[in-house]
Length: 292
Image (cartoon, rainbow, N blue to C red; front, side, top):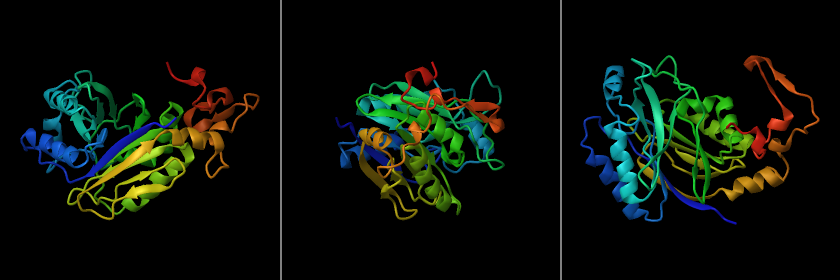
């Protein structure tokens, strides 16, 4: 049974922070006019916040139920699409003075379905506070997606936990302006391979980013990729049954990492985390292993 999902990754530069609200609306409408089958649209990290310093980021922060995200949810509902508008600056009354780098999933019904705070801000260069939880969400009739923002991709624990929580694809909005995008392309493929998931990494276009967005399949093959920093839209149709196939038969028909452990195997202690791998909880297909 196929689970096709037409997606569009929009490699564009950020929108000026003082741009009128209908600027972004027009951008999304033009995209859908050109690619009308698209069901999921993804923009780069901090796409709605160009020409910013730390003070402007703090001034731009709003609660998750503030007017900015309310308008964006209404836009997703009006257009009948799943929308990931990059990431935004989030404030929280329970954390006075803190600003989080937060991405969201907005549904075709105009609802906020999931929000994720970047766990690994790029220190010492970013002023954001870290989030404290992994986030996955479901797109009906397609599959389960997880969130990772930019520098998160450098920490294998994040992608591993998302996959263990059932994610079949990881959405990775990025705003990389530096030469380490070359390493991020390697990490996108590595995270896809070692977790047998799709990775959708969309970077900002110049001058805010160096581009080179890509979609990687569960065996680490690059399906589509932009060639440089210029504005571009990557389109593809994901079939998350590919994840089921790869995990069942193995990468290259061989490697089945999620079936590595037998329940009779000894528990493996993980001193770094003061935790352990318990064989009976390893496989994401084991419902009893999932967090409630």
